[in-house]
Image (cartoon, rainbow, N blue to C red):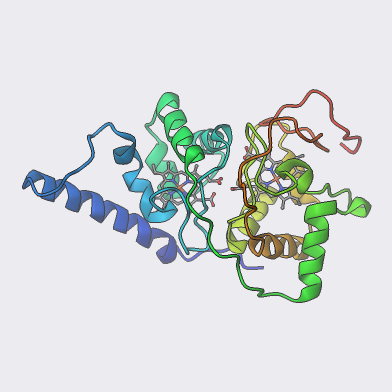
Length: 251
Ligand code: HEC
Ligand code: HEC
């Protein structure tokens, strides 16, 4: 599985964002552009659009995630994680370094309310048996290896669960497998107990490829909103989504 990312591919959109921002400032200085007021939400998120789309819908870059419609608390946790070094991607770490909790919360709320259309589901790039394995793990888990069903926490329609579990539809296969790889190696961390670290360490490389490809091929449901908080009983405890009782006996 290829988890390495070409830095040129990742840095080009950042350069584009910086160039667009400086071009905007230059033309505003000449009085030619209608820039949004400096402290408006449009101005805050202008630098994000090159990589995440103007409404957080994502772009066709395989490593840039959709943000729109994910629960606000989840998005907020991620911005804090980038700021505090629990997730590593230098442009993101840099952009949020000096932003306050309050500012990050407002950005998270903005993207959580956006409802831009989803991209067309990905075309199959792996065998039918790999996809069947992916579907099995996502919907039912693999009891023999103690892998819980992804849908138990990410929702039956895979659109996440309030307040802090993200949807898994509308993401690229390469992004999903990179995140699972990062959790396994400890590069990405969430609040303890970090259930996604536990889940990722129980998956083989082939399992990760299988779930990532199957997920990327799923169309969004008609009403793509996260399931209500506590609408399903989680099989493991997650620090970012506390539930009082869990059925986990395996840790
Ligand atoms: C140069 C491209 C780039 C720019 C500009 C950028 N991002 Fe990101 N962002 C990424 C990438 C790539 C990731 C995934 C990184 C990883 O592998 O963990 C990410 C991840 C995120 C996540 C976590 C998403 C999730 O589902 O876990 C959030 C939230 C986010 N970005 C918000 C922002 C905001 C807000 C801005 C503007 C202030 C911004 N980004 C600007 C590339 C970018
Ligand atoms: C016990 C509950 C639970 C189970 C089971 C679970 N997840 Fe998660 N998942 C979470 C939580 C909580 C987060 C958010 C963690 C954080 O705050 O960073 C998450 C985040 C993710 C993300 C990050 C999405 C993004 O936008 O960056 C991916 C990918 C993911 N899970 C994939 C899976 C897959 C695939 C499975 C099944 C093999 C699975 N999860 C099973 C609770 C769970």
